[in-house]
Image (cartoon, one colour):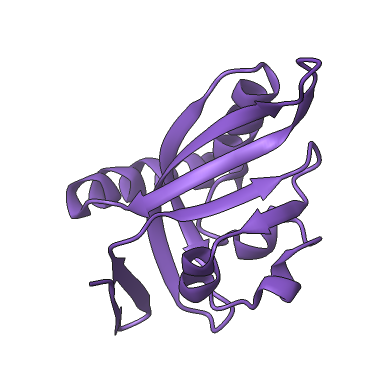
Length: 137
């Protein structure tokens, strides 16, 4: 059974995988029900919106620059991301993003599968992202 627990300002969830798909520009073309539930947005608020609608300000721009470079190059990307819910709470996800191709082998977008991030991974990434943010400011 899936479980969702707000703790302080963090939104903790267990269970199902969050799925989202975007076009080449990062506009959301599909989300599963769990993605909507955890992000706090309704499907009609997400479809057509840029995926950065859920970007938390604690996430360094450089992390996304590397991610975009990897997936635009046709490779899978994996990493931890801190996201911002519609209500202002945040949640961490361990994310895998892969390129999507059509029948002509042309890149058409990206699909992401996200699962609960481990506390150990969150702690390590928080420190790393904090250092990255300091260099950006």
